[in-house]
Image 1 (cartoon, one colour):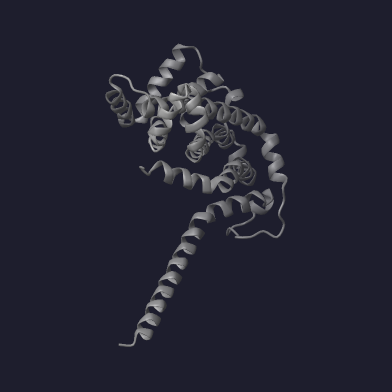
Image 2 (cartoon, helix red, strand yellow; image 1 turned 90 degrees about the vertical axis):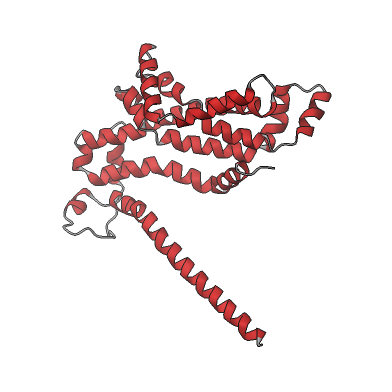
Amino acid sequence: MDYTKIEKKARTHKRAGNIITYILLAFWAVIVLFPFYWMVLTSIKSYGAYNSEYIPKFYTLSPTLQNYADAFTAVSLGRYLLNTTIFTVVTTAVMMIVITLAAFAFARLEFRGKNIVFILFLSLMMIPNELVIITNFVTITNLDMRNSFPGLILPSITSVFYIYLLKENFEQIPDSLYYAAKVDGTSDLRYLLKVMVPMSKPTLITIAILKVIECWNSYVWPRLITDDERYFLVSNGIQEIRENGFGRENIPAMMAAVVVISVPLIVLFLVFRNKIMAGVARGGLKA
């Protein structure tokens, strides 16, 4: 038997399989990235050039940045960005504190009925989000917190899924470290901050980034709880742009506003993509 021919044939099949895989991945990448390309392309076309195109062109020979200036002057896009930044930073920071303490309690502390409480806690994930939104809306309205940052932030400062993910990560840390720390007289809070948090840094970073993306893209709750433009987030701002006539008439300027809103999240993901993948993979493994 000619093992050389068999090995050569196997390499050929493998090379052909890799080529097909790369072709399919490239085709899928084009499909996924084309909407972003079209968004950026439209945003740099002049208003006149865009309206004169009976057949849309996939390029432009006279790019302009005037649409970006119009996006900031025609509507309060700067205010929307500032509101969204405040909402995102505060919500994410408070949520990280809440879920870290909750995950530590479920992972390391011993108290009566812990498993039952945790099961009941996880069962909250089965409740449709629409029901939660209705309950939150009634609560926030009764507390007279509509059209305010506390009203926007409070319903978003915890997450059952993130607590579960972080708890699973905390449980991978050996119990011997906890018992050794207790022998040395270390408090639970100090052990959490000095040992568990540093060892779970990839997962914590991943959760923080996912929460930032979630807050930045939040639409239903801000739209429901605010009708004052002073508290609009970028998602509501885009809807306002579309509804007030400016967006319907000046599509390039509206696309420019969408680009401005999208860039921070794209940059965030590109910078931290490896940490996101590492954190999700670590959170899904059991030691």
